[in-house]
Length: 114
Image (cartoon, rainbow, N blue to C red; front, side, top):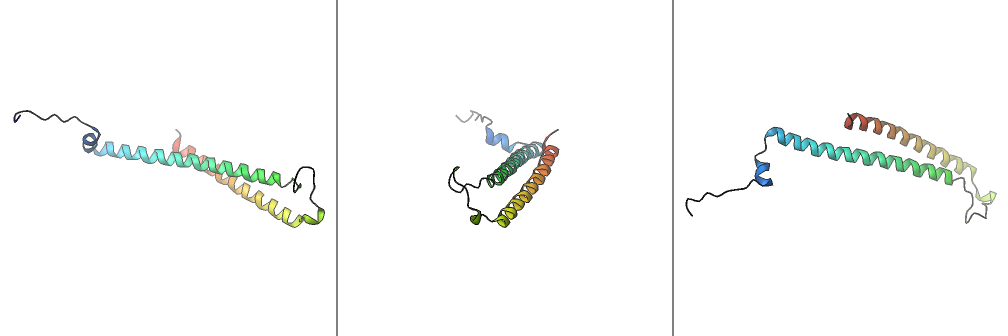
């Protein structure tokens, strides 16, 4: 038993310890790139979803039926000023989100596509 050599198979731990600087840098770069790419994609999807929701909300403002499709809102219950203010605010939010989306898509393309 004294003369027997111990054979150590190279598992992940030993292989990891033996990696050179270049391999370590490449592994770290891959992880950082993959994480950032995924987060960028999700952010773009979130912005797109937000725009859809705001546009839907703006369209839903045209439905002036308070309870069901057969009833109408009384003129005395409707505030034109509030309606206009909310419609403009939603329009501005949508435009800002569209600008943000355009910038995000351009940056994503620049950063992650060849």
